[in-house]
Image (cartoon, rainbow, N blue to C red; front, side, top):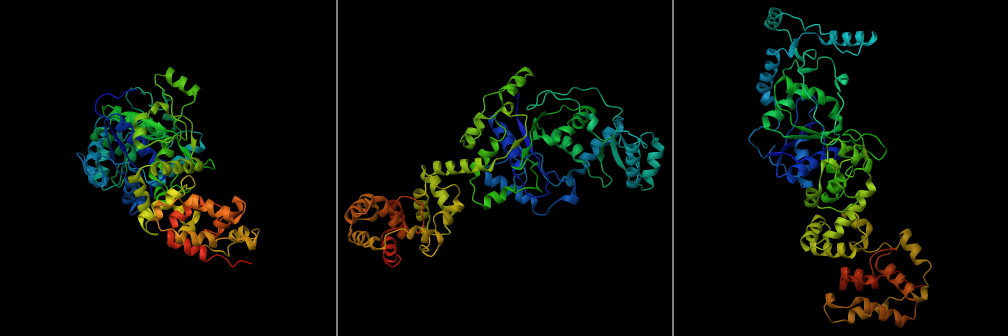
Length: 502
């Protein structure tokens, strides 16, 4: 379904902890949809529950989005026409005015029941087999009684009157298509304004989305049960609702629901562990982006057009994601986030970066704490095709940074079967020392082959000796590449400090 007119979306996390992968995917899909349709998106912090706010959470969310390359158009730190985009406490008067409209038109009422009475009421109704969660005791209070109790300083909440709802339709979801009514899952007469005068998320999100001109709401599937309440609020306030798109939930590898409190899903932890942001976005974008044929037919029948989606390991830049993205191509099923696919995507994004000097320099600068940026670039190129994550550099190829440890189990196992009398490295050492050309211009591969022939050793055995002498490890780049990265002086020094021949 092609949006009509200006497109404005919002990503609205709560500041109750670090941004996790599921939240980042929601932000990504908002970004993709907005940019594909020439629109904008807002970062809006939903802090209606001050008791659960975690200090520093907003800064962490902003840092994670910036690292991922998802640049919101309006929000904390940027401002915009509807600031502030956090601290909903600064907009309490706005929510109160909308709550008063609902009171005035009879779609809401004040409830003075104490917390203890509410608990007792819920338990009594449950024991009786009722699905209700409240007995509407305060619904029929007279205006005089409400006024008297407010004058007396009694605390109250404002509830929606679900027995007096206007007729309305339920538009098809942009992902799930036609939806069943979910009123049965809602509490009786849901609370809209709490006794601390803060709105519940439901009232605040509807008011903010309307006031900010949000045209599409792209959010997690967990909000589907609340959709009926939100549409009711729009109808009670005579407001036009935005289009809704609900994203199927991401699952941890063990099949559990992804959340801030379970699993290793903190976005900034992936940053610290050296994953490439474009690979993370690629991984998240394709998690559930791939609608099966039967689902495609169902979506087509419902009027929600489906489009052939990329394979779950297709390498994509953010620009390519924007171009190809279609909400209608999302599967309706929950999707397991497979870490093996991230390894594949990260490895190949690194390989692509190696073909572009600017990208390679940026990669090297991330790890320049080990040595110079130029040297790191040479190491990355030498390890091309072997490197999955830049954090692997000192583990995958420690010999580029420190001298080989010939006492390690791996070095001993490599050395043990080699014939001691033929552990020949001195010829190559002397040949390299005698070469007068610049190191970068030498055909090191040819030099190694020539020296190998002089020894009379089988090529494989000679290369194993050189690999042990230079790295102490069984695997790695070719010997020529290894020599080139090490440089003349270090290469000669390595060959001069091999284990004593026996």
